Amino acid sequence: DPLMVVAHSMGANIVVDVLTSLLKGLRVDTLVTVGNQVGWFEEMKLFLASDPRLPNSHQERVPKPANVGRWLNVIDSSDYLSYAIEPIFRGVTDVTFDSGRGPLAAHTEYFKGMGFYRLLGRVVRAAHEGVLSSSD
Image 1 (cartoon, rainbow, N blue to C red):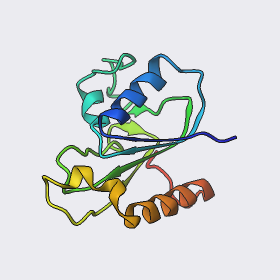
Image 2 (image 1 turned 45 degrees about the horizontal axis):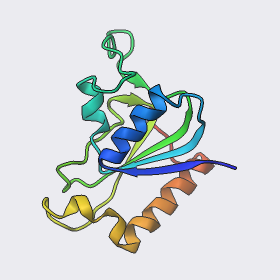
Image 3 (image 1 turned 60 degrees about the horizontal axis):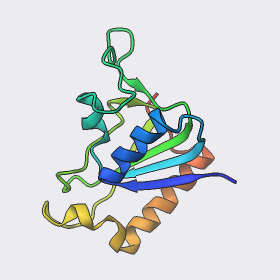
Image 4 (image 1 turned 90 degrees about the vertical axis):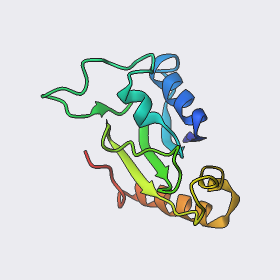
């Protein structure tokens, strides 16, 4: 069966670290990271598998983990703990969610309303059908 992993905040950072270092043989069909700091952690080279030689003049972005099929990253521009990943990792699609909340509340609002689940359903379906793609 297809495996879909949804991870929020520090949990997303941990999932990426584990998938890229400890469980490289585990195939994740769809990874959805939500309101996280994965891009920032990679820029600081904090993951076990981070390569200090990337990016470079020949490779502008870090490759998406080989064991991840689709990677969707949900960000809320009001969430000060939510970072874009698409500019840092190749093969990731950033998706914007607007919780309608201010900076102090946005980080905890993703999973509280049906709007998030509707968005998640739409983007996962679109990615599966090939309508939504990353900026490779």
